[in-house]
Image 1 (cartoon, rainbow, N blue to C red):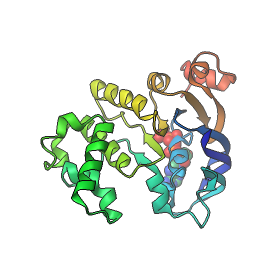
Image 2: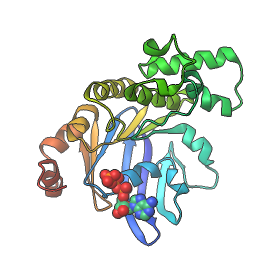
Image 3: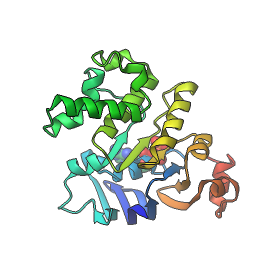
Image 4: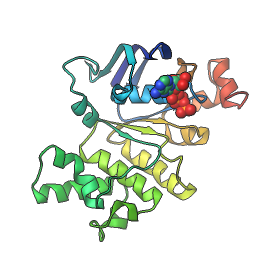
Length: 250
Ligand SMILES: Nc1ncnc2c1ncn2[C@@H]1O[C@H](COP(=O)(O)OP(=O)(O)OP(=O)(O)O)[C@@H](O)[C@H]1O
C-alpha cells in the first residue's frame, strides 16, 4: 500500500520551474532514495512532502501530494499537523539549545503534554528507537551540544520520532558525519523502516544502494525513472539514468 501519492506535481520558485509534473507512489514502510545531480530538484521535492517550502517566498505548486489519500496542500490540512505526521531531519544536525531530554520532549510539550511520566516514557522510547539511549541514559540533563555530531543527528531523529510520525524525510542525513557515524545512521534507517515510510536524499550512490528499497532519479526537475534499487543501479531502463550512475555526468 502506498503512503504518499504524488500526482502531476510541479513546483516553482517565482518563474523558475524546479519540478516538472512528477508522479509517483511512495509505498509504506520502505526506504525511497532520491538521487540526481546538483540542482535537479531533490531537496525541493523532499521539502514539498511536508510543506517546508511554504516558508520560501514566491514558492508555488501545481498538482497533488496525497498523504493517506488526503491532499496535503488542501485548506483542510494544517501544516503544523502535517509536519507532525511527516517529520524531517536535515543535513546538519540541528539540536535545540536545550538538554538532551528536552530536545526529545519538545514536540510533546508544544502539544501541551506535561505529565512527567508520559514525557519520560516517550523520551526513552524515542531515544531507544534512534539507537542513542544507551549512550545518553545517564546524562539526559546535559546539553545536546555535549554530544558528538553523529549523536546529535541521532538525537534529531529521536526528536522527530517522539511525535509519532508516519513518514520521515531525511535530507542527506549523514553528509556531515564520519564513516562510523554514517554506518550507524544507515543501520538505524534499516530498523526504522519496519515502522515508518522513509524518503532520503543522498549524493552518495553507495549509500542509496545500501539503504533503499526503491530509487528515483531526477534530472532538471524531471523524474526520469523510479524502480527497485538493485535494478536502477544495475540495469536502469533509461540511458540518462545509466549515464548518471556510471559517472558519465553529474
Ligand atoms: N529558495 C530558492 N529560491 C530560488 N530558487 C531555488 C531555491 N531553492 C532551490 N532553487 C532552485 O531550484 C532548483 C532545484 O534545487 P534543489 O535544491 O531542489 O536541487 P537539489 O537536487 O536538491 O540540489 P543539491 O543536490 O545541490 O542539493 C535549482 O535550480 C535551484 O537553483
